[in-house]
Length: 193
Image (cartoon, rainbow, N blue to C red; front, side, top):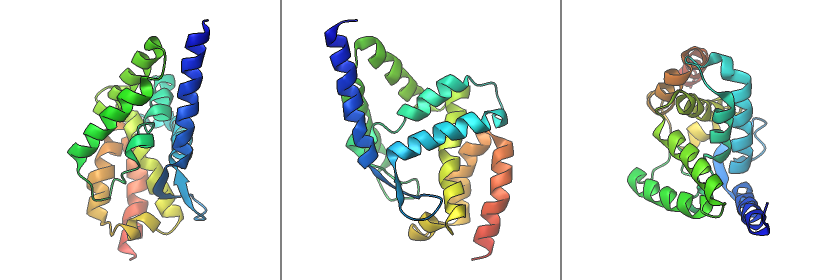
């Protein structure tokens, strides 16, 4: 191991510490505050470990966890763009691609290529691993909203149909039984409003 390689790895690890400062729309399940993107990445990695048996296709859980731990690193430069927020999706993709180039570019070439490939795979959501990872990424905010009385759904004036379209479709694609379970609870929450 060379000093230059270690210096690159430590520079990357220091840079991604900034993910802890990116505040998300989703509240903690106890409702006390909004989560940060570092917390979100850790939490959905745990979701994947616990809920892997509900994937509707075979997945390599280690690859899924890697994807989930790196998927939001680009938010260091791009910020969090809530799924129910109002932003230009095409513009955000350009900003996120540039962020991925910069941040993963801090790593030694072999790790840069591996991490970037995993990030690109997650974004494309075509492989079994990425489809399940996207499902889990969408589930966690729904569970949080159910726990805290729909906080971000209320804040963003979200309808049940929007949750179904923006969240349900992705969750059902990778973990249909999980979506069926959540869908009934989400529907009941919206019906009670």
